[in-house]
Length: 380
Ligand code: PLP
Image (cartoon, rainbow, N blue to C red; front, side, top):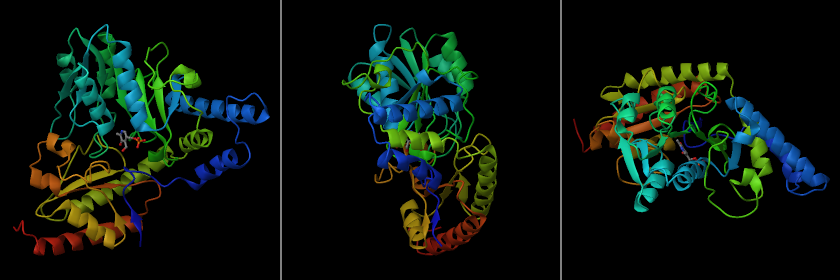
């Protein structure tokens, strides 16, 4: 049996999505800026996809900017605000558990003279809105706090944080790459100026993303070129990718989210029956597809490789940092000891995950953990 439980890293592109994209490779391959029929077909597809994604967020099409993915959206949002509003202030507030796309962008800005406050999180990974309020100074121009964490699945109180930013007239950006289509996001209900999204986390293609930019928000563009994407992101639009992204937004229903959550709970409860384990993140404020567990006395990498041998794909930390020997910055921010953080595994489900796969995973993890502990130099 082959079991893919690394949907936080990337998802299977849904066959329906691939089918919708095909036309724009094989027949309607025009450039959306061209005036002839091929070009107009591409422009129609672009407009329709933009409207679909806008509707999903309860936004307007002019507020949807297509990018190459979550990383570019985070860069455009954070640097775009920082450079366009540096005359008003040089202070940014974020958290210690953001994705590297946000943390490295902030680090770059610090080298350029911006000041960044990295908020602590509690042991479940939650930020209290009060902390944001306290960190605000008269130089603060931007707050960037993720909607849901990619490693531990904790869902942050972005509605309350957005309200604070609105009162203080500070821009609010949220990275919703992991939460999109799992947790409802309505820009009329939440006070937010910028939202990052990515296609490949929601059964869409890789290499396409969105930055929602609230009407009237001034951003500095990152690259020079043509006037594409309302002059914010130059370059010929990736029509097939954009069409695929739009199609993917319709792929996961509320029922699918509930079904995945049931399987998530089964997996979580099954794995926590293994002695000397603990759940990382919040039980209540948690993404419907995320289980992150520390298995004491073993190395996460050994567990990952043994599970891979048995056909189960999982991850340690986030995919981007899993090649490093440093314990995950997210788990360290929760206050875990390095040796506990090193024994942590993330299991991320999708709509394609079946109950048989979950049963097989619980059984296999139990066996492998027992075996590894027998030989563990970390001993008991
Ligand atoms: N933000 C979060 C929370 C993520 O999980 C990821 C991907 O792992 C990204 C940003 C980067 O997205 P992309 O891979 O589309 O650049």
